[in-house]
Image (cartoon, rainbow, N blue to C red; front, side, top):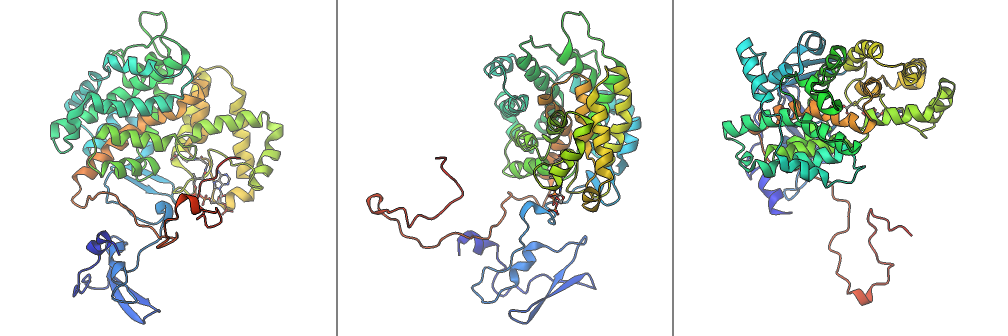
Length: 461
Ligand code: CMC
């Protein structure tokens, strides 16, 4: 047993947790016949309370096995509430539907970060502070120009966000209120700039500096699409759609990327590095990368006639229906419903796109099919967001980047909450060790290859 393991086990003579009333769970270990009473708080038991359950005194004690944390609360959080069965999403208690209808992304960011809606002067000060931090250091441009012309913009965003920590080294004073505030507004302010610069790099077009006369979503569109015009004037319907998409993606409690931000941030690294970890997690096709994967899937399906054979392939596990299913929503992703209602406005303001029809028909046929309904697989936020971006002439590589701009507000709010949490400790999951023990080192010349311990890597032949 390692010293580390010993240090966390209940001490000798420790009678274990004391429970009161009926808020306890009685566990009987049938191996020993012993019973244990574990306190229940907030409908949970403390995994560490299981450690007292032992067969022998020398045992390490029982652990909970929960790969992918499907039933483990890793923190207490007051930021976002989700009821997956009922299809409810609330930020600081306010339903997402109300926020999308009445608020703006920057106001929602304030809500996430500070815990309540701002008064008018507070909102004005917040918008001002974010707006004056939209520019990035000129060296960031040099840094970005080092990427290949076809580098994925998520890779560029990931690297440039990590690089911000080198421009703001004081951000590692993670408990200093001024540094915390600066990092918060810098991250929210600079993310659209880094995102748009990555796009312009791919396009071989000059970087467009932020226009601080414009609103947050308008400025993003300007940095993406401005060419020779003196002033870029975005279509207000499109700016509104982008703002709603930003709100919809702003936070989603302890998902893969937020857990990455918290996990990496728990080492007390600076927030830029922690957020870069979140961007890396979001990049994957099962998370933020799904919106790009939806577009690729629709292009492969090509026409409405091919939908039945595609759905057959999904049922045979040869394909995955991207943009469907969710770990938490087992009813309907409320964000998908809101997006759908805004999608029509975008499609009105943009050219006809046959993929819209294809997506609508694909959704209809999947929802008529018992394979999907019996597994509670419904469209998620990414099913329609990709088609909206496509209509806006934004290339698929940028879809997840736009998700990252919005999620930055959630990541930083979660990081602030975590670093303030008295329960915070460095993240360090346990494992069930399945490998060899006490094997002997065999000198190189004596190895036959037969006694090789097989590992997960395969060398291509
Ligand atoms: N297409 C086909 N079958 C699916 C799909 C899908 N998209 N999603 C789940 N299933 C099946 C899965 O094969 C399993 O079937 P069975 O019980 O017969 O083995 C069953 O549904 C339950 O799935 P699961 O894998 O246990 O579900 P999960 O909670 O582990 O996975 C998910 C959630 C989102 C990773 C998954 O639904 C998926 O891969 N969806 C496609 C990718 C996607 O759209 N991701 C975006 C998520 S929303 C944006 C975000 O928050 O990042």
